[in-house]
Length: 356
Length: 276
Image (cartoon, rainbow over all chains, first blue to last red):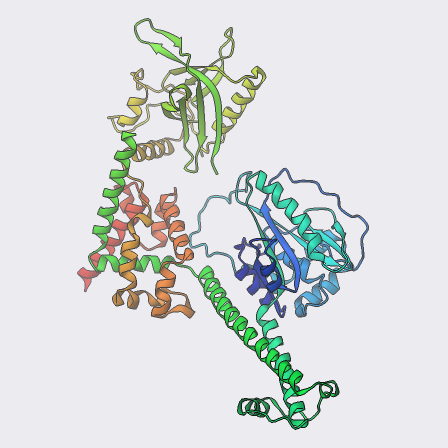
């Protein structure tokens, strides 16, 4: 059976991975500062957090729940190299607002009756997910006869854990633990609770100078911007119709907008309660929202284009390119000079080191 | 991944006149490292002299013994059996009980060196008649080049390790990035000939001039360059050159895989030009 490969921990990789397995309207973003209110606000709604940290064999034992809400989907990580994908899936499967697509729906329906270990095992059999995951494996252009090296203490292996809200409680889901870990209950904003737990963890790893990263799984900003545009356009349409109805004179731009936006015949009764000034104000606000959303859309399109380009490069084998580059350098009579120059520079460096 | 141990200990020095070993009082650190190239490097740093490197040599599994000297308090002997060399150290860590722990770790690292197909070695190693200067300098007491029988080291691997050490100390350790300087890559980006030759090797959705620069400065290109460099520096560099359809016989004269790669390309293009 084909193994699961290591993939890069990059928001662009994870976003494309999610989209490839059929999930709609979700993206992954890196969080640089949990206390940055502006960044956090722009990311809303956030469905879950993923905390990455360097794994050690001396793993901390956490207090896990043995009995928990049966609707909470928890799976053990049994597949090597799958922890990133599994952490993301843990969030997706526990968030009813997300349209998770056929593959994940089928997996959840089948696996819900199994114990956490078996759920983890079954994930390995979901071809769509495994194929999507492995599509991000770095090309290995050379095949050597020696055996694979086993990871040892000090090697760069990262582990991923998720934080999610679920029915009024915040949980930490770590596939290497026996069950979910209850962080605490929340009233309105689960992020406050999750933040406490994450900041505590960050502090712990900062003291040990261990590398870590924090990601958010949130609503795709493009998706949201499109929603805002659509809703605002609808609101503009209704407002213009109402203005027309009450006999207010529309300027040329407003007339154009009305023509562009409408076939709708109905007029919202509540809009009729508003004065002309209020309606015009509503119009301005909706137009402003559309402009802001279009800026967001433009930025997100550029970001996704960048993700696409980077992901394309990640999957590409550059060895033929490199080989051809060197050949061209020789054809152009440059290669021997480059080698000589590099050797001279190294020689100088070596001499300086020896003097020290 | 390197395996390493640092042992706080002082040295004894051999007095040629009196033919006795004399304890040196300086505080020191004995460092043993098994690196990614499967080399065991032993170094002793003089901590009282600003961490000066006073002693450095390579050792091998099968010919290295490190043990406590009987009858002496906290004195340990490092013996290289194929040279009959001896080095004495005295432990300086505060906790006496840790001495054996350090020695066990030392031995474990030495044992980790991979030597395949161990065979009994009964004759002198057929190296060049002139021993590499590096090895001769390491131990001036080494007069008798007759090797003890029953040393289980693969001849070819020993030769390779010696070549590696010699190379490291006398030649440059070039990487492909040293050759493809930023200055050169900048000129490539602006050269239409390079673009025309290379565009088909770019990712399929990026085969235009706009992406040419982006690819050349991308971390993915750099990673691939590093990967290739690592492969060329490794033990299977001959196989790497073969996979790239380059002449791997160049490695018979050029030990360094990167330089051999460049020379193979030069040769290939020259032959292409001859055939035109």
